[in-house]
Length: 360
Image (cartoon, rainbow, N blue to C red; front, side, top):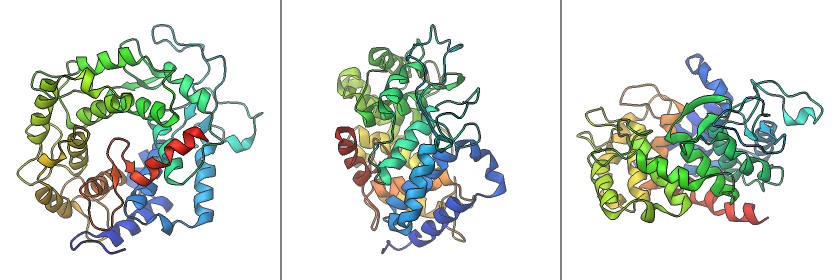
């Protein structure tokens, strides 16, 4: 595949292939999020039009590994009372990796571990991975996963990473909406409460915070807008004036370097080229991005020795910033890249297979 001058596509492919096989010691903490790290690698190869570098046996093994992390629904789908999940069985979904659960391949008789259960971010990335790899979802506990989304939702309308507790912010709102959309089943989500939570997170300057009263953030804006878009209500929930104010706020995130920053008066950072740019794409105002300057900035954050993208120029690469850098380039129609679906943050080809999965 031919890439434009200055875009180290072949080196990025090698970097992602290395990350699939082994991560450096300083990334040991990513083991609990192995599903998400695998998503960055495999979907990154897809965006680079290099998915064919994974041979068929490798793809089959990856799909089997993903399903091994599936936690099937147990119990009758009872909802938590005031957010208290104590006494309820683990929620359906996908765990972050094999560190905390019994693989499905061990058999139905294998005793579940106490803290084993689905994680919203891992469930989102698992479903995306299966779509990228062309799986037909036939082994997926669709009903259980969709139903148990209610177990992750809080009375405020927000979502928590796991029903047993953890962080609660706009990231998990987005993950829940993506899961419901990909399964074409919103029965487990109180969408009215969710929409109220998003509106209450609007800030005085037009941005959107991770939760009500928090500092506006470009990633929060992307996550909130994409969630509303997936629900099909962005134009009705946010007024024209609110969308205009948010557009202005996002445009002002493009800094002097040509890249984007996530908060006002912060340094430009590779990942925000996607978060802020993606939010503008969801608003259908990507035309306001100075793409030439953004592309030039992203070229400076590539790691010349081994491929991948760092957070800022001169910083070592990591899977997350590498994927977001690739997503931003794909969104700008970079030569040799697969077109991006900015709402789901996967290739358009992978997203186009989802309806067939739903209707299969």
